[in-house]
Image (cartoon, rainbow, N blue to C red; front, side, top):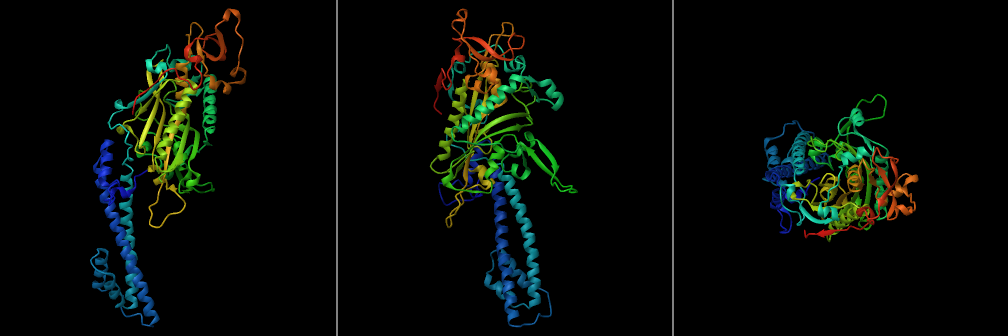
Length: 549
């Protein structure tokens, strides 16, 4: 994941980024500005090595031409292999741009065949040493490039800390009023007998768990509904591999992720019996990573864009640095399912589209709309937040989060992140825009965007807190959101009964009971018809307030 190296070179075009533009990006991201000068220095050394390689190739070709002429003229091999100092000096000056090619050719043609062959061999050694130095500078340059962030969209708030994140709009009465409820998700997931964290920790360590009964049913319902929701909007479903080779992961993950987030697994590199080579692979932290690599090393036809994918996968994260945070329940865990919107936009434009005419920015808004409408269909209150520059990952030119209101915990918590990475990822993955290149035209790369739709365990936590009613003593429960009921167990999913006269003003809806009540784990529960959000229709929110970005 890198910026175009041309951005670090002085530009004739006043609208081009240039070194000062990159320094400005680093300042706005509150990152080290001096790394820009280090990259420029390494780039200049690399370019000088390229110049030397070109001149040495020219001298090598001159040797071949001179030998051909002498052989054609049937000249003898000569008596010595010693190369005159003045010829070596001429070639050295050529690599320093201090002598011209004609003088070098004349010097070479004055040598005998043995001397020229010896010089040709010497040039091979010289080229190899130069290549080694060039590769060293290129590797250092690439490593430094990976520490510089993407360009920033003009609407990104420039602050260092997330306490300055900008709330764009608040949706839902309970979010606007920050209404509180009795139980948190930590209590509720246990009260519905939906998880066993103790046995999970015994089997796999901290933050690991067994989902049970209604917890499994809710997760499967969310996965199925999420996939169908996006497929109905033109997304192609992908179930990607859950681990990636190191070289592929390096193209889609930041260096800090390797240290703090990714799990490494090792295994035999070959299935051939007797082979002992070992290969490193990394478990994915998000389906964005393998989906981003889906089209690597490809040139995409603009007529086929946008390409829109919905990825569903298990995700694995170490959660280094989160010690003491969300240690109970299933909100912050090492393994979880995630449904991701992904697309590629082209910079002409894990959706895929064109970098021209703000196409990727229009697509980002569409993806954000998808995520908001999804939460509305479930009936979850939330706020949309524009993330500050200092909190953005390096790839994102802009990131917008959706934070749902958790009335039991009394806090807004992130459920969705939607990012436009422009051509930052595609450049490293070499996903080009267009299958043919015009003469002297610069290579263009697609724009890549990604957005969460549903991280299942977090969404379950939010549903539990928002759809709880009653308490353990009086026989309370958790109402199953209407859009998820078709995906619950058949005997419960659409259970409807006509209320008796004594129950007038009530309706029968699908709910999950709290442990200790007389109802089964997934059962039809009596809920007051006037019970607020439980009567809320999909896609409707009772409060919506928007602030200008």
